Length: 360
Image (cartoon, rainbow, N blue to C red; front, side, top):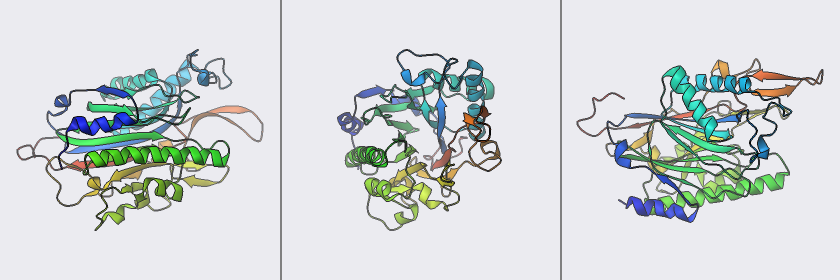
C-alpha cells in the first residue's frame, strides 16, 4: 500500500512539533546495499563548561564535585570515537549527551582522527532535569525528523525517517526513565513512555502498513520484562514465522541467549540487564517478497558489542567515571568508556536492477 509521504509524517504532528526536513532527493544517489546502525548510551557526555541554563551540569565542571575538566572531556571523546570508528556505523544513535556541541565534537573527532564523516546531526534540547538528550549522527540525510512528546523532565525520543537510495527506514531513538527513585514511580513513567511510543508506531503503521521501523535505545527495562513487552506488543524474532500480525514489534534482544543480551551490569545486584535493545516491525524481518531496494535485518546480525577494550578485568562495562573505593573511602577516576555496552544491527537490501555491482 502506497501512502503519500506528507500524510505519513503529518500523523506524527499529533505527538510533537515539527523538527525539520531535508530534501530526500539528495539521499538517492548511489544507494548502499548494507546499513549498519549502532546504539550506545555513552554515559554523561558533558562538556566542561558551566551552562547557567542547565543546573544539571554543575557536577560536570572543573569546580563540580566530579572535577570534570577539559582534558577529561577530551579523553572521553577520544575513547568514544575509537569504539565508533572500530564499528564504522552508517547511523549512530547515542544517549546521555548534554547538548549539540558535544555531539558535534564527537563527529569532529571521528572526522579528524579516523576519516569518518557524519555530516548529519540530529539533536534538540530536551526537558530532562539533568540536561541530557538523545542524538543521531548519520552518513545520510534524514528525509524528515520529529520528536515524541516526552514525560515531564524526561528525554524526548527522536523519530527520523530516512530514504536512502529510495529505500525508506524510520528510526526511533529512546532513553526512558531510569530506575533511580521509588519503584512504582519509575515503572509508571516508563509504562507511559512505552504507551506513547506504541501509539506513535501504530500511527505510522496506520498510514503505511508496511513501514520499516527500527526502534533503539536505553529502555531501562530488561528486554523480557512483561510490562515492557506487553505495552509495546513485542514478540521474539522467531515469532515472525507465519505471523499475519503486521502491527507486532519484534524484540531482537530476545533472539540472543541470556548470557549474550546483557548491556548493563548492576554491581549492587550482581547481575546483567538487557536495557539496550532494538525492536523492529514485521516488514524488517521479511524473508520473502522483499522488493528491490527494501531494507531487512540481516540474519543473526544483531549483537551486543563485547570487545575487550570496553570491558574491565571482571568482564563488565568499563566506565569513564569517578568511583569511590569502599576500602579507603577515596575517589579515583576510571577512564574507560561507558556503563553500557553498544548494540549493533546490520540491514541489507537487494539493489535495483542495474545497480547490483555498485560498491557500498
